[in-house]
Image (cartoon, rainbow, N blue to C red; front, side, top):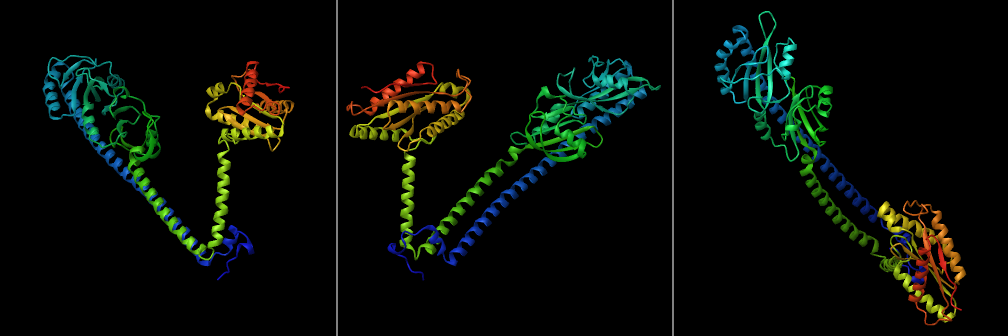
Amino acid sequence: MHAVKTAADAGPPQPDDLHSHKRPALIWASIAFFSMCALLLGMTVWIVWSSHTVRLREAGATTENMARALASQAYMELEVADVMLEDIAEHVRNEGNNDHTGERLESHLVQLSRNIVEIAGIFIFDSHGDWLATSAGTGQEGNNADRDYFIYHKTHKQLGSRISAPVLSKSTGKWVLPVSRRVESADGSFAGVVLVTLGLASFERIYDSLNLGNTGTAFFALDDGTLIYRRPFQPEIIGMDISSGALLRAYREKGPVGTAMMTAKVDEIERLYSYRHLERFPVIVAAGLSKEDIFAEWQRLSIQIVLASLVAGAALLYLFRKLMLQFALRDRIEASLRLATAELQHANADLAARASQDGLTGLANRRCFDEKLADELHRAQRGGHDVSLIMMDVDFFKKFNDQYGHVAGDACLQAVAGAVARSVGREEDLAARYGGEELAVIMPQTDAAGALQVAEAIRMAVEALQIAHAASANGVVTISLGAATLRPSQDRQATSSDLIRQADALLYQSKNSGRNRVSSHMPHA
């Protein structure tokens, strides 16, 4: 075993001495501890990241299933409308498109609309847009020649069904999705339009049944970017052009089916979207869960896991510390106590220094200032020498804070304090923060001329910082100073308060005289 050195032989042990005598077991224990910490950290990161990946995968599966269900529902309704349009168009082609035909077909339209609840209305228009027959029954009149779908079919010879942007129905006043088809005469000329309208309320029932969280969404739109329906339902965005949105771009770039994290054009919320393009129709459906909703539970669990890991790490650290004490201090108790004493003394000295230092500027604080000034006055009264005090504060500092903010104000005070500290050259002088933006310098054994010289040097040093100050006439940060001197040998009743009052009065004299200057006076004869 190693011999224990006495204080007479080697003096107080140093940390390097203790480190050089550590046993191999201590080294292995350290390796084991840090290995366990690394393992714990690695496991925590892996668990948190894996659960993040799993949650994202689950959310993707959920949105894919919702998009698939929405696609099936939309396809079914559009397929029904398409078949009905083809059937009605065939009847019109065979029987003609006139008032007499309309009367015969009207009962057929009424029956069709009753059997399918998703159908809001069925209409037959002649070549002028007049209503020949509707599913609402007899007595209904109107003209739809102004509708986009009617104009389109009148000018295009496409015979297939066309899905248009939602409109407010002229017959019911409700939002409907028009699905229309051109009707031609035997010679191929335009003979009118047959129309099936799907109520958006039927889509709303399906979309409201989806569990989309707090800020999730689902919608379907034409593949040219025309928005047909979106949950939550907002009438003002129906027909909105979302062709430049992230989802439509993904569809154009990656194909008819996809899942990706995207930011919505409508509300700028980031979501995990799954979308599908219908096979026979120019329609895209999509469902999205917001990133916030997806990871809310994951975040809560991750915090719990991290906290548990921190507790485990703290327990390991505690055990490691106990083990280190057992290994490192078994044969060195006396040396360790000495080292602890030295460290305690250092800590106390550090605390004492901190207790006398201003936390923002690094100068002495008010407590240290008061003690120093009282001590120097007592010393001066015994020795009969002068004591000078310079009081100063930053010009228009409140306006500086108001214009540039308190963070800039703190930085300004720190810079000014640095300039003051650099301008005070003697070790016995003390630069302190008196309060707020007011600073002070105590100068023992210094007459009025010496105080004035130092004060002027401080003023110039601060001005040389060239800190911009738009609210000051000088355009930069400046300070005003008052330098007072007491000669206690001639005024033995003088106190700290007397000297502070004199310096403060001179400071305000500088402020009242235009700022950025020093006011001083010679001591009483």
